[in-house]
Amino acid sequence: MSTSQQPPLGRFHQVDGRRLLLHRSGAGGPAVVFLPGASAFGLDYLNIHERVSAFTTSVLYDRAGTGWSDPAELPRTAAEVATELRDLLRAADVPGPYVLVAHSLGGAYARRFLQLFPGEVAGVVYLDAFNEDWDVHMADERLRLKPQPVPGGLTLRLVTLLAGGQYRKMLAGWPREVRDALLARHLTVGSQRAGAQERGDLPELATEIKAAGPVPGRPLLAFTALGVDPAMRLMMPRKTLAAMGDGKLRLGEALAASVPEGEHRVLEKARHSTICTDEPDAVLRGVRDLWQRVR
Image (tube, rainbow, N blue to C red; front, side, top):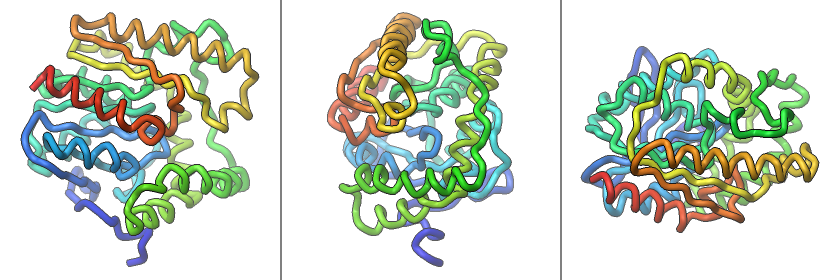
């Protein structure tokens, strides 16, 4: 296999007829499980994972249809993704309860996991994560959740080309063989299309979570990243960006207040897409702080 086809770390597990990639390090519990954002793979969080594995079991994985896992028709419901993750953790013999670390879109899947399997969650760290109440806290209507059509082939090829610089910068500290494999995998039209397909379904995910009833309370730590991704700076006027920052702060405070053991931390310079490489020490500190509270 070429570098892009063969994962540099981890092994495959069979779940519902598909091969899913999981990379596990460390020992002990509760295990920390990373839920990637849209257009992200499990190994994109390797820098935090390796440091977490020094004090407990740490798990990275690729959802079906993303990374090195087998294809799936996208988008999928949050229930499908959450159930798949639970089955994967069982197949890999990673016992619960878990500390879920959810980045961006991964927040939707963490929220649904909580609804479906509350007894298997010890706590959650939200990394500038999606929340079903996003619209409640966004005063500017232009920031409300809307279906996003998947771009055409020409646009996706352009996005893939332009994304190279960001990925190379983000992954600069990864071991060479891991970095090269990730770059080869990320910088394909198929990977960019999968990210767009998952991102385009946000309103449906919010509706699904709300329709399922309250999300059970568990100790949580919510990070809000106030730095601005380069793509957002190009697409949004300054006033809209400021309104989004204010809304995210309100959302983080509300999320922390929703449970007795909730906490909100603000990262002024970290950007949404690269929070784990912009502020790795702060993210690690947050994961360890929550893990110590719930162990």
